[in-house]
Structure formats: C-alpha cells, structure tokens
Length: 137
Image (cartoon, rainbow, N blue to C red; front, side, top):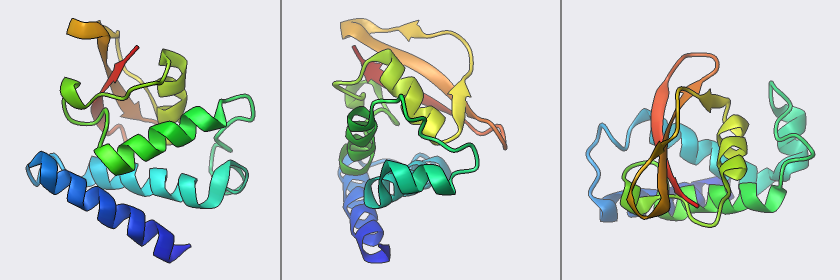
C-alpha cells in the first residue's frame, strides 16, 4: 500500500509544479487532501470506513463519484486552487460528500461564479482549518 500512495503523491507533486503553485498554496491543505484521497483510492471505501473516526464514507454515498473526486485531486489538484481548475463531473452533493469524507463541512454560502463554477469554503471539523473549493455543475 505504501508504494501505491507514494506513487500517487509523486504524481500529484508533479501536477503542483506544472500549476506553479506557491509553497503556501501547496502546503498543509494540499498534503492533507492528497494523502486522504490517495489513501481512499488505495484501500477502498470499505476499509477506509472501518478505519475512519467518523466511519466515512457512508454506505449511501456514491463511491464512484468519491473515486472521481479523489482522482481529480491527485491527478489535477482539481477544485483546490482556482476556478479554472475546478472539480468536473461531480454534483453538488458529491462535492459535499467528498469533503465530508475528509472531515470538512461547508462554512457559509455557495458563491456562484462565471461559467457555472461554484465556490464554497470548507472547514475541518476538528482543527477548524478552512479551504476554498471550486466545482462546476
């Protein structure tokens, strides 16, 4: 498992370089989301749920959409930096479930941007860390 996670994270590091994100932008929240996404992809929903403090993902969540969101985080840093690199192919519920998987909740209202892009702020349930997320409906 460790080798698979390392491989996914190396791929994500290359994407960060291509996007030319600053050290601040690519620091703690990107590492956190990347690790959680890679872990979910490697061990799968059932084992992730058994090991997760909140027992996420819930069984009724769409596992394929969670995998799609995790892959977009790893492969494209989607949704985590700019409206131009927003999540694609995920309904609003899927985005909310994806960040709930990582122990984040919505903090405030959804902002509607150009070209059907939406912006939300998510906040970590335990430490209060906040991050802006972009997705396209």
